[in-house]
Amino acid sequence: MRTSTTSRNLTARKILRVVIPLAFWLGVWQLAAVWVDTVYQPGRGYLLLPAPTLVAGRLAALMGEPAFWQAAAVSLGRIFGGFALGAAAGTAIAVLTAALPWADWLLGPAVKVIRAIPVASFIVLVLLWAPTTSSVPAIVSALMVLPVVWGNVGRGIGETDPLLLEAARAYRFGRGKTLRLVYVPSVLPYFASGCATALGLAWKAGVAAEVLCQPRLAIGTRLYRAKITLETPDVFAWTVVVIALSFLLEVALGAALRRLGRGRKA
Image (tube, rainbow, N blue to C red; front, top):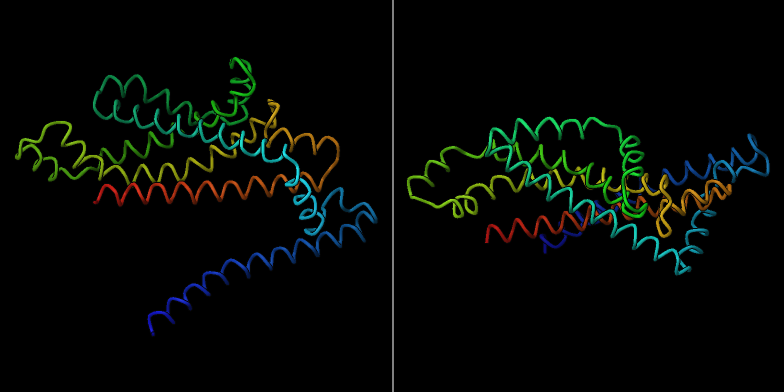
């Protein structure tokens, strides 16, 4: 009985930690929108800062359109595909640079250059070189993810417990068994941390690329068109969609990585 009461209290506390800040900032938003509409821009405040209720109404209207779901699904697939490609490439390059000194000399500086180039420069360059505009967000997302995953996986390989490696040699483990039983459990937390960080970067960079390259079906395209037509409530509504999908992706990725970790332990 005491355990169930404690569990309910913890659940209620978690809910309050979400609801109270959300209510507070929505209230601040509402007050700011009222001030803009009555003092700063009387009667036209919605062009600068629409009220939360107006944004919610536009979001509900957009969700009733098939094009809304098509744009959201295509953007999700495109950017998550770029994320997966970047994570795979970053992991592969990290393994190469950790195992082969010449690979580290050749590939390490290139990855560091990728990490240093601003996102806007990448978008413009990829837009010049990519075969189609629809592939630009995926490529940009992959390039944002690659150096993050490379750095984390490389650190995980470098910090693998030498005593475990010595034990693997003493028991005459083959390369495959050493990789499966020693390296993978050691690197997995670093890989998960890198993916969690890189996913947010990939999502933001991918949407920014969509805004600039304007593919036919994309959240970024709808966001940009709402901006140039001064549909500010729509701009806020699409921004809410971007934030919500980012949270959903993080939750889904976290659940997948935790399940992978439990599977490795089993």
